[in-house]
Structure formats: structure tokens, C-alpha cells
Image (cartoon, rainbow, N blue to C red):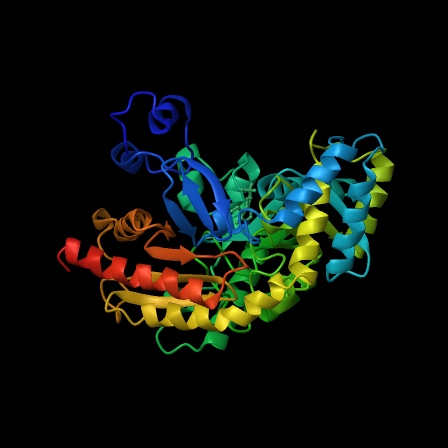
Length: 456
Ligand code: PMP
């Protein structure tokens, strides 16, 4: 960082910007990275240095950082009708068209879409929908929310309560009534001699025990990511969703697929919930919905849940909830174009075309002496670093091994993400096999250098 130059962008950032989700020790030592623009899968800083962003921003910039078609759609909508809300029965025509498109793309035969500005707000909105529905249906005690260990559902007070410990302990969360069932990570939590199917069956039994202990008529709903993203790319154990689905059905517990990361192609299918046969009542979407070019979250209600919610909302005269910028027409135009780019212009096809190379290079990295598990699907993957491949013991926390790897990779022009002891990758859907090789070539070299640095 060029902190000696007074009034440098870096200094101005340090004086004026409060970065969340940023290790402040590293920030103070290394300085921020101030970006000016992007090109394809690369972003450029104020000094002209380029970085491959192997995380698509935050999983969302799937069409790259300068897709002209999406930019044109944004500009055209800006000239036509740049801003409106969705309250009082008024809404932009473009937002209606987007809603039809989302329902058509969804696994639901029919339904409705509710708009927010983020994934957190979308999940938070669903909590209120569940609470209102049960309250109006004579079950006001039905308020508990089940999620899973290592889940990530957002940062509002309710959704941080639904999220894993790493993100909520500092705030004295979770709130009471937010329950965490088992994480379906077989490699980490499977017992000695237990098959993957047996593991899934055990987790399903544990879930039923939790429901019975709490009282089935106190549970408002269960949320699950098809693949846990921020928890470290946890691909569900074989048979997991098939095992838990009937239990939720048995106790009439609405099931919500949080597709904020998986939705629109990340797993190689349009929906992670279809890939893993979750059969949810509601889908929560965000991120790729606008290819990262506009803030948007969407709650896609399946027909049965939608009808029930509409009925109680009519009794109450309204669903008393909404965000000023929810359903903004600029976002809707960007989303319509982004979805067309993903579906019709071959982005989803490309995920499937290059995923083999991505997974092969990931598995190769997983052969490293200190790599415990290389896991992933589609274009999302993680390599977990361990002290010992057999015991799966992590390295001592003070080594900050994944942070060191990410920091060193950054210097070499590669953005990747440390999550716990894992390095997480989720490149843009436009990536080529040659670019995948570039990412892993840099990463392999970095990992070797970092282990040499720490004397291992
Ligand atoms: N759900 C999941 C699965 C997520 O990964 C995230 C964000 N990474 C969220 C919800 C929250 O979305 P946002 O950051 O847009 O509030």
C-alpha cells in the first residue's frame, strides 16, 4: 500500500470507510484495495494492477465485471423509468415482467414474488411471513425457526440468529427460538464406520428428536441452503434432503430453500433445490439474480404457501411489510437481462462445460499434504487445510493459514476467500478452462510458499 502518498485512495479509505467483514489487523498492515473497474473475470485497482476474482465478487458477478448487454439494459431502463416502489398496489411494468419470469424459471407451477434489496432482507421477510401465517391460523406459538450449524442466512437481527456462531456470537445472538440442527457435512461429522446414507439417516433422526423436544406446534419453518456456501461449501451428504423432507412434511413444517448463492446456476442446475430434490415451499433468491449489478433479493412463494399467505393477508387487509427500494425497476430490468444471459446466452451451459476442469484442479490441490478435503459442485469449491489428513485436526488457529494463503494470493493478483481453515472459490460463470488453470497455478504456488513461510 502506498500510504506515504498523502491523500492516496488508500489513505482516504482508511479515514472514511468502515469495512465490515474485514480483518482489521490485516487491513491496518496491508491496506485496502481500491478498485476502479473490471474486465471479464478481472478487476483493476487504482494503480492499474489486475486481479482475477475467483469469488465473482461475493458469488454474484457471474457475467463478469463489464457485461455490455446488462449495462445496456440498466441504461435503457434508467432512461425509461428509473425508480419506483411496489407499495399500495403500484409497481413498474418491468417488475411485473420479472415476476412472471421468476415464476416460470422456478420449480413451482404458480406463485408470487416479493422483492427486497438483499438476501438478508429476503430471509427476514420470510420469517415475518411464517409468523403472520401461523398467528392468523390460530397457532401464534408457532414461532421457532430451524436452520443448521454452519448456515449463513444473513446479518439482520433475525437472520444473524439463523446464521452460524461465527457471525452472531459477538452480538449476543441468536435470539431465543432460533434453533440449529446438524450440519450435513459427512467428511467432518460422519462417525467412524458410518456410511454417508447412514449419516443422513442419523441427522434426520436428530432433526425429528429436536422437533419433538421443542414441540412440533412451536416450529414456524426450516431454512436450508442447498449447498452451504459461507459455511465452507458444504455439499449435502448423499440422501440428506430425501431423509429430512418427510419429517418436515409429517409435522407440517414449511421448508425454505435459501438459494441466495446456489440460485441461477452456481451448482450447474438453475436451482440447487432441484439438484438436491429439496421440494421447498419457498425459494429465497438474490446475488446472481442481477449478476451483481444491482441490489436485489426475491422471495418466490410456491402456490400452496402463497395461497395460504394471501388468504391471511386479505383477512388482515394487508401484509404490513416492505422496503422502499424493493421491486425497483432498474433492478428488475437488470435481473431480466441477467437471467436471459444466464439461461439463453450460455452462462449456465458454460458452468457445466468447465466444471469438470474446475473440480479436477480442485481435487489435485486436495492432494496437498496439508489438504484435508477438496469439495464442491458446479463452480463452487473449497479446499480445507488440516494438520493431519487422518485425524482431520485443523492447524493451530494462530497460524491463520487460510488468511495467509488468501493474502499472498492477492499480492499475486488472485482474489480467493479464506473461510475458517478452508480456501473457497466461486468464479464467474463466464470463466474459461485456461482461466481456471491460471487460478489453480497461482494457488498451488501460493500454498507451497505459505507452508514454507510458516516452516511446515
Ligand atoms: N443467504 C445466503 C445463503 C448467503 O450466502 C447470503 C450472503 N452471502 C445471504 C443469505 C445474505 O445475503 P445479503 O448479503 O445480500 O444480505
